[in-house]
Image (cartoon, rainbow, N blue to C red; front, top):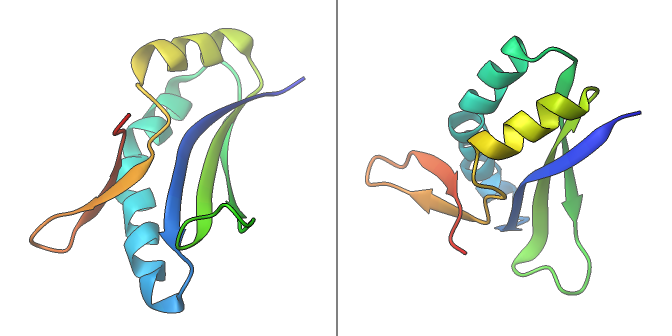
Length: 102
């Protein structure tokens, strides 16, 4: 049995011009999660998907789920991270990260 936990659910612009922004945010924001996965008892991996339903602002919603084989790893993960991230911040150097606004 596997257990999914939402780590990112963020509206994005689905234009190809914006791919770099959200791909960079994934790279910059998920590092601590990958480190957690390296130390977990069971297997942990991450799945990326998109929701382009009629309620998707700007064209699509980026979804990243953590998938756990071990329920205790999921519990420990929930205690360590305040999720899901729901927006992207772009700094003055054009580096992007996901954050939780509410």
